[in-house]
Image (cartoon, rainbow, N blue to C red; front, side):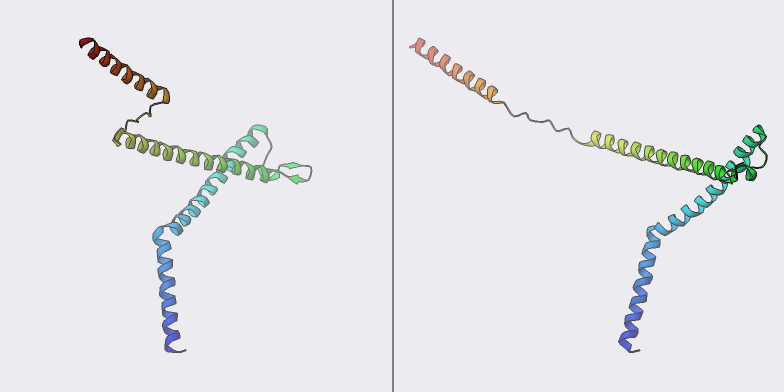
Length: 156
């Protein structure tokens, strides 16, 4: 490997390192990792809620026995119903989390807009006179001139 190739490889490594660092500085990777970890933890909590609390309460109330043994014909539907219930709970949680996020975001934007309106100087709009208003103004001027001429002729 020549000296020039070694230098290019070194620059390539430095650029790669700085690019990776800039991604970490922006926080995207870190936020993604936190989201994955929280999602896994939430999934475990919701699965436990669905299987151990809700499905167990239903099976106890209806005397169905163990969830894993629920069958319709030869099809085991207990696990499927558990998974479906977990999916529904997670979907509602995500929906309401997004709803709360956007409610807060829009409230903040509305407050900023109101504050900006209050701080902006009020600019009065100048209404351009209509053609009828211009004609009326000209007629008034002519009337004043005629009155002056009449008064000046009467004094002579």
